[in-house]
Amino acid sequence: MKITDIDELKKKANDIRIGIIEAVYGGKSGHPGGSLSCADILAVLYWNQMNIDPSRPKDEARDRFVLSKGHAAPALYSTLANRGYFDVNELSNLRHIDSNLSGHPDMNKIIGVDASTGSLGQGFSIANGMALSSKLNSRGIRVYTLLGDGEIEEGQIWEAAMTASHYKLDNICVIVDNNNLQIDGTVKDVMNPYPIDEKFKSFGFNTINIDGHNIEQIIKALEIAKSIKGKPTAIIAKTIKGKGVPFMENQVRVAWKSSK
Image 1 (cartoon, one colour):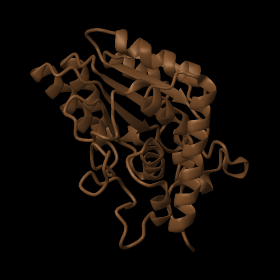
Image 2 (cartoon, one colour):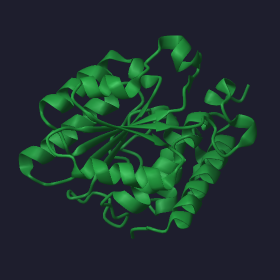
Image 3 (tube, rainbow, N blue to C red):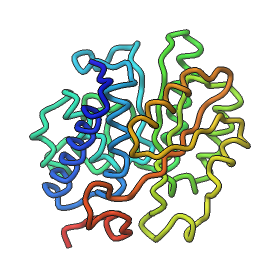
Image 4 (spheres, rainbow, N blue to C red):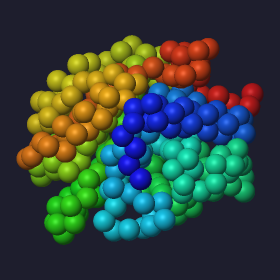
């Protein structure tokens, strides 16, 4: 089921956001801000771009998605539920002691999760392994990994960038959710990563800058990434933390919500 209608994709992104809020409210904890900022990106990936089938979640020929910024699990859970991998009513069980919906994605507990993530910086390396494997066995899958802009302060990210470039992994697409905020403040103040695009370019990547809430731009960038041969692509998506909930937008305090 591939959706090409822009308004319908916007609706899917809105459904993801509703699920995020319901999940975080149900769990009384979680990361709403960084989950809301990537909803549009996930809507395009799961309904327009990726070769996936919820009825065949273990199909070896499926594309893969790795949520490297694993704390944005509510966004992935909401996406998977709305895509048909499990019942959307389960979202309210986020972080409950007897629930499979833990604070970070666990591929052994949740159908549709391609990699267990949470330790920042490691998801990109996992995605590299998937992409390299596909190159070696000629399976032809594409791999997408979503990074946080605070996450790219991790040194392992740049080791992974070197690896992707060295092995000419043109079947991997890195997407940076550039909402400019992390728990301790702005990414610029904590550990300035800018210019992000130029850094990836210096590591041998094709780089694309987009508005991460513009569905048309997201689709175009991902299509360009598919056409690039001989090098990986990094899409720098400028987003708004807490997008869609006015009192949460661009607020550091909504990076984490606890029951306290």
